Image (cartoon, rainbow, N blue to C red; front, side):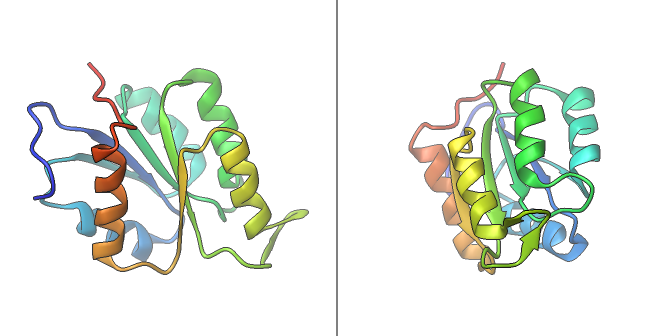
Length: 142
């Protein structure tokens, strides 16, 4: 375990790729986090409403229906203090009028705390989340 907390940090993972969603969940399993998952931004918004008080949202950028930047904008309206990190393979793949790289840039400009490039290993993902927690960027909700 990377850290020891009296109250669990509540994390929402959002990705339209079920294999990636499962991969991220398994990577964080055993770290003492309270993990929730959603297969897209629409269900991610529902999870936020239903479960509330998340400490961290980790979302894919490249998703159908609502990309990660639009999702981030919606989330920030209702949960302005929620820490958000974005993940993407990046590159020139287009979503609407923007490339994945541009969407990452926009997400960071609009309040995402950090970004992580896919593909990543389980250990890289655990270290990424752990570094956020150790830096005290994530404060535990009450």
